Length: 337
Ligand code: F6P
Image (cartoon, rainbow, N blue to C red; front, side, top):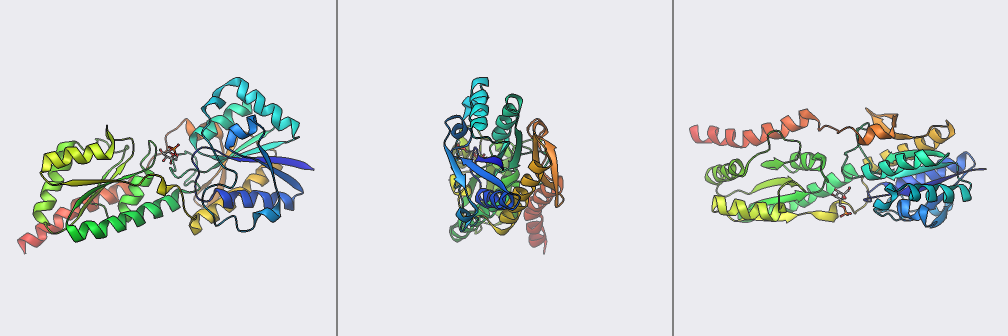
């Protein structure tokens, strides 16, 4: 009987459990045994193994987080760590490893592939959606839903009190959550790392001032990607308060974006990718990510997923920037009427 191993690595993402379930069930259909290692790559190095049976997969896919637990393990860059992981995988007679994770995890998977004879496959699991070669990643749309719901809630209180809010969303160094949450939350402005040129403090302050003049009884929300403004969103709020004379509130959403039940799209994606990973194992594929492009499963060399930057959809960027402009245009129409 063939044996494969699975880990979840790096930041957990809603849908990882549904993916594990699909791997275990599909594998059992092909008479393949599945072993999990807890806490990602660290769990392989420390041999924290856990058998995964189809019967254990009930009531799993609807849960957030990861039943296999995860960790960040920068030590895995070292050759010794990869060699140790390879030895542990061999001791368990494992022929393929499936890594569910993001950019850092795929670097780890690629590294291991150099020191281990088994097959190494990656499944894109990160709320950031910042992996090239796949249209979307496990957890991304749920994180956007969560951010949108939080923005909607802030909108209600902000509207009631006619306040300005700066809402910080996750994304590491990419603006996918920021862009999608800004559109879905009808944000008046958006700050994401991909904007060229980046809006300056004076531009943001000017927009807030104009909006306050035009709509004194309305709220004004800016969605801001994390790691963008030196000192964070609190510092940006402080500077904007000073520049505009209007109190600007900061609301970092933080890790609530990572937890929670996966939405339907993430469950479906996870199961599609989990099943495809087992098929790739049977096809003898190694060193690849299994992703989706335009609804089709694709196999992409692992290094191409993290060596290239994934671009935001320019049509969505234009949509948001255009709608931001229209905020003011609608007021011009109102004034001239
Ligand atoms: O990669 C997912 C992510 O949530 C990023 O959006 C964020 O920058 C990072 O992880 C936070 O990592 P940690 O939970 O280790 O602080």
